[in-house]
Amino acid sequence: MPALSKKYAETSRVHWRVTWVHGATAERQSEARDLAALLRLEVLRPKDASQWLSEARTRSLLILRRDGRPAVRPHGEKPWVWHLGMAKSRLAALRAGQPDRLVRALSLTGEDALVFDGHLGLAHDALVVAASGARVVGSEIDPVLGYVTECGLRALGSTGAEMRAIVSRIDLRIGHHLDVLEGMSGRFDATMFSPMFIAPDFTSPDMEAWRRLASHAPLSPQALAKARQCSERVVIKVLKEEIEHLPPPHRLEERDKRRVV
Image (cartoon, rainbow, N blue to C red; front, side):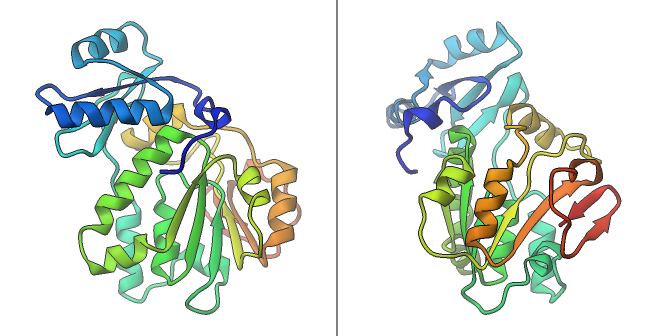
């Protein structure tokens, strides 16, 4: 994971602590301390972490498991580990030759297209786009979420040659998408944004916990202008009531409340 600047070490809107599972080896405990130093978070022993977590529902834990993968307890919820989510069925559909709505909206040509993902999150969209043959540079503003996603992608890449090739086409950057864009040279074939929906039309215990942690800042006009400057095409996933600040789209695809612009 790239080293974090102080600016982005302070972007999370919640209080986090790092710990390890009961019975963890000395090696895992040392890794947890190194992780806490990297993320600039305090590390707690499991017993102390449980006590700290119980004192306020706004607190969250990043837990290093025995296998070395991180689990999270956002806002005291049950431990959660990174998984493919809906990307699993989307990847299966791509293998079966079925078009993906986001990939189609990006209108990528060639096997080596370069795409910027301004809201990487759990990298589900990035995986689907990378599976189509594109290379993806993804920015994630929250360093904890970025670390969890990085570990999830690394584990996914170890499951076989196909996933290893897909994951190798994703380049994770920690920081605000506008800062990451301004720090890069060259052009992208497409840029995609997926700001956090204000009122999503789906329910998922996993995602609901992350929603409370994630940044809900809307896509700024400055970020949109920069994306249009350095990309052939910009695709934004929003809801109907969230498009007032966007310019008229060139193409609109709609399904229920959700839109791809």
